[in-house]
Image (cartoon, rainbow, N blue to C red; front, side):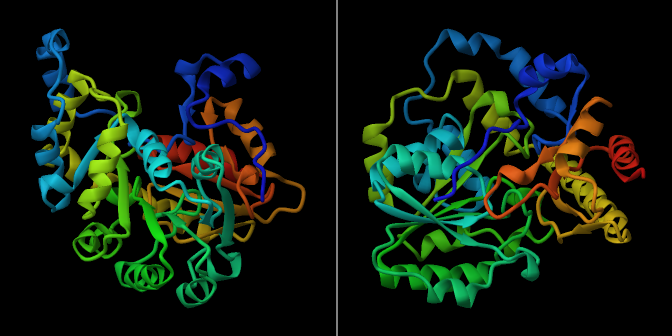
Length: 363
């Protein structure tokens, strides 16, 4: 099993401050994959006006919040489970399912492997191939599934490749997993950034498959990682009941519950976010694709994976170059199946993107 090396996460600005002597407030993090618009004005105003909500306990069942989420994703509120960030829900789900053998499609987010290991399970990786543009070969993947696998974990769009699996392919995967008795956990943290979200999201499939749970959060799209608000969507009511018996009450504070209700109904903010990311994603992809010293892979999320083709330049070199200019990218050499030639950056506003690319592309 692949072991992960230490690395700087997009949230590790305090560590960066210590190592490089750069104040964290002066760092633009192209590594955190957070919406560059920041929190919406409507959310800021509402939280300020309702600060007294912290004097009372929130609704233990979070019915109003779950109804807002259900309307946003297009399902019944009884199919919604809320938690203290998607990380808590990943942990709870793995505790309940207690997989002995799990498969993760990688390279991918390391928290899945960590939680599986904490439960005593083993993680195997199915590699996305560079020659396929890091797009999953569905037929080959399905042919390798076995009865001794308990859990399949997918990040869709995937982090760090930004590639995605279509709903059509996901149906084929779910059918195969049903035959083998495999539960499927799909992390859709970045799906709201995708232009073709309707062709990627697996939420509609929760009405037909009881071996499926989908995880989302508000950290990235709604620029609120400190709020710690995540949710799961599943048609398996027994699973929801089991998780609810394990989770602590009131894991979401009163302000986070109020914020959630505002976020999912803020159509102006949602529309502006999608327009900005769509425009900058295409512009940045075209810019790097036109170069012969870098290779890029078609992105679906709000970030892009890039391979360095210059012989004497590594991702660590670029990390050092950009951080000294107050910009933080992600060296992807710590991800399974990637080496020191790969880095990732998210899309910010045009001026910041221009400044980053000028720094990266200089000879």
